[in-house]
Amino acid sequence: MKKLLFLYFIFLSLNTHALDSDKLINIDDLNILFDLQKNDWNENVLFLIKKKSFSKVDNDTDTFYLKSIFNDGEIITMPIFSNNIVKKIKFKYIFFKHNKKNLKTINNHFNSFENFCFEYFYKNLSIEVVIYKCD
Image 1 (cartoon, rainbow, N blue to C red):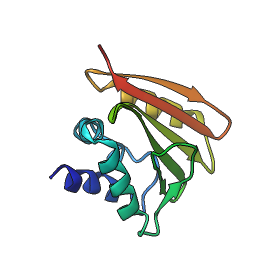
Image 2 (cartoon, rainbow, N blue to C red):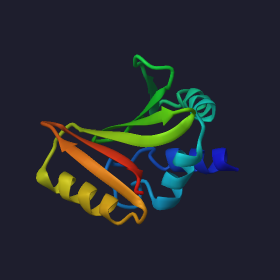
Image 3 (cartoon, one colour):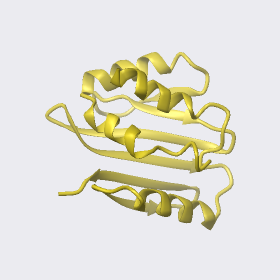
Image 4 (spheres, rainbow, N blue to C red):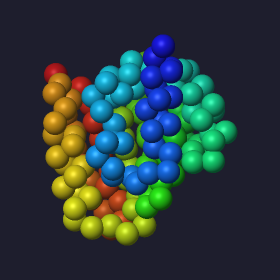
């Protein structure tokens, strides 16, 4: 069941904009992602890369990263595991055309999540969000 909900979250991204407010990750999806183990995550990524709007991002770890392709940019989802448990999730929003409104939208959205803390890093054409469960 968790895998189906995870897939539902991912499929919402098809043919949309990276920051459509109704397409941004919600608290339920985030809880599902934090409940996944490394093998479950990697299996889901391998399934999803068969779709043209997703691809696997190579990195130096045994965890796959998932790139979701939108009309106006890309989002790379990068879980960070410790002992097979998700400790943090990094979302890298990459925009073809970036403006300050994107940062405000992301900040407002992630600030609305109870029990989760986040940090964001603003770069030229991207915003990285690192989210984790608050103690």
